[in-house]
Amino acid sequence: MKYRDNNKPMRSHIEQKKRIIIKIGSALLVDAGYQLNETWLNALAYDVASLKEKGIEVIIVSSGSVALGRQILRCTNRKCTLAEKQAAASIGQIQLANAYKRIFYDYKMNVAQVLLSIDDSETRHRYINAQNTLQTLLKFNVVPIINENDTVATTEISYGDNDRLAARVAQMVEADLLILLSDIDGLYSANPHFEKTAKFIPIVDKIDADIRSMAGQSHTKISSGGMITKIMAAEIATKNGCDMILCRGNIQNPIAHLLKQERYTLFKAQPLTQNAKKRWLAHHLQHQGQIVVDAGTVEALLLGNSLLAAGVTACDGMFKKGDIVNICDQNRQVIAVGMVNFSQETLDKIKGKTRQQIEMYLNNKNVKAVVHRNDMVVV
Ligand code: GLU
Image (cartoon, rainbow, N blue to C red; front, side, top):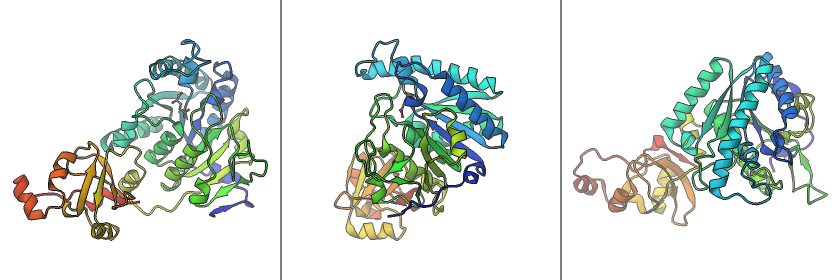
């Protein structure tokens, strides 16, 4: 198991960072009566201002819009329908943005609202576009306040949790630290709410099956993530060279507490082995379909070759040219992820065919690989 339990992370670990993403869960910002916790936000603004004084750039990923909007829709004691949730988000988001603007301005910070849909991080050109916007805001010393665009997100096309959204943002802006402020002080070997013997884990050197097995479901009424999405976020962040800290946020001045070396779990950044595009592909959250390949092709892909139609035995999903798909072996085990050069409809017709047959069929002498090796990553 790749974790240590005897080595406290150091204060300098945080203060030496250049760009930090702070993710704030709904349960911290919104109280049990579904009102904004202004005192807490005020203390956080103080913490952020202190980080910025040290020359650290800060981006905030803030939840809370749905929880804040529920009161007006009178759905605090029951489950909201999807339409109500989307309406609640639009009501709550404006309150949230207002509060951030007012409170951060008291500490002489300008903020900007950025609402992202899953397509903004999972479609390459939109990802680059969002990246440019965030870089520009940082250049002008503005604190971006990001949330999912819940008003248009449906369950099928959403991140659903801001943990993975925050990790994708950390990857997008090449942050060196992601802090998840939560209602728990870090990772435990089991859910400490149910198991008295659960052991606290201060440092995770590498995320493996043991670490993944420690995750449980969310246990609060207000927030939507759980330890599972936090571990997923840690995988995205750490594999993109970004440390991740999971710590308690339900205290005043949580960042100041972190600097005093209060308890937290540090997931350590991994060395970068792939270029930015391949890392973006590897952590893709929205695959449009899958391509099944034969055993010989699996070997060829593992050796770094492009995927040719001759090795494809089946394809599922309604993907089009340029979409991101999983590439699976005959047991439907995912072995690679890549950007496909044909629609599912065309691929279905050319699968198993040789290059010459495809050239004749498509009446084209410049037939591309199904997935070029530069657009593919073995997972
Ligand atoms: N985007 C949601 C909101 O603002 C929250 C998602 C989450 O809790 O992670 O209410």
